[in-house]
Length: 220
Image 1 (tube, rainbow, N blue to C red):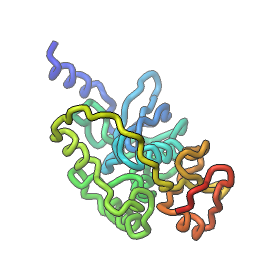
Image 2: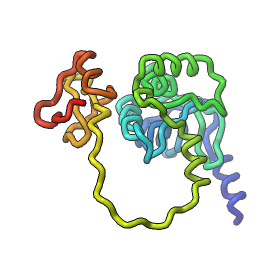
Image 3: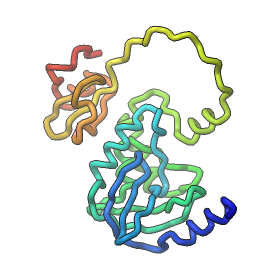
């Protein structure tokens, strides 16, 4: 059987319209596994694109989506099926649109190639103005541009190993429950509630967060 035939059959077997299910896995900042009855489907959030796995803020995006959706009942409204056989859908959990929540937190872009959603555009402008999440970076690279650059870049020859560069202290992760912030290397840097991101320690402290005394050493 051809690959094209297999893909077509898989797409035809996917649910259509709207359905409800439970979020059983969060793959990254824009992709979920949802189980509805005996069927488990992969869902790509409609209208957004979150950082790739090796981009800055990818783990924060995944963690935020996990906090919002994991193990929760979700209403799924299917918009399309992508070339990988994933459903492209708007997903509502607890009355909140996950696409909108991720853009509003500054942890995903509006996927301009596929979305003209004015609500997502407004939320992205607001997150950018407030320098939330990935917008704390002066020049964040959209995932679609990053993928294009990565696919077109020539493979470099292996180079001799060099000593690792000293990591920057930022960005800092703030625990929205305890209002304690952590720097990279802290045990609780990616804790469940550590979803607020600050570019500098000064920014964290101005927002009312205090440093974790055991691990925040470099407060640049």
